[in-house]
Figure 1 (tube, rainbow, N blue to C red):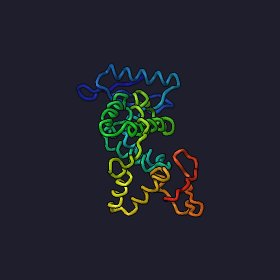
Figure 2 (tube, one colour):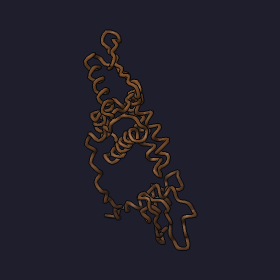
Figure 3 (cartoon, one colour):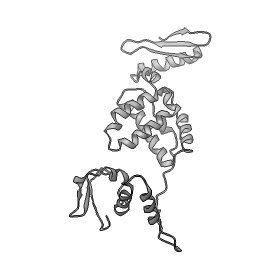
Figure 4 (cartoon, rainbow, N blue to C red):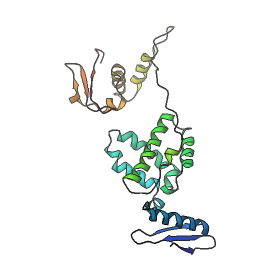
Length: 242
């Protein structure tokens, strides 16, 4: 049986103690709510379904994000961009909340706020991190918590991009020429060659900045990429303009 203790004028502390289980304690604004909680805990213990909620009630989203960053993000090839997204999540007030208190409506509110600041694609990646965080917390770290991200509608995917640099028109320079002029004006001496290489090879930014000389074959005019976004390696041919 659970026990109840009055704390102040309108606070009730409920406790469930049973052999073989950790003590469960929680405070409520009414005795009726405390009694309902006790019944639900005891029912789960009777059915063998009980999982302790203590850790979820005392652990913040920020604490779990930092743990996820250390144990999971740091091991990924895309650790840099994901770490930046986690930092954005850590700055949001949601990070200060205890994980047990996060509901679907809270995630929906976060979604609507962030859509005013970032693109739907960027937001989907942030929500994916949150969803993975809740799943890892439950499956790997033994924290009793549901996944509220599953309760909301995710923002639509970004439309496929088909924008191309426009050729010269009516005597005006082409967009490529204007782009090269702007790159030459940059204080970064590497910007122009990187942009030229990107246009000639269609390589991603992460692939360009991660290049090593050992992967470049000037005789065969190829670049070997051992690790790409989809996990496969590939060889990129170089044009005579590279």
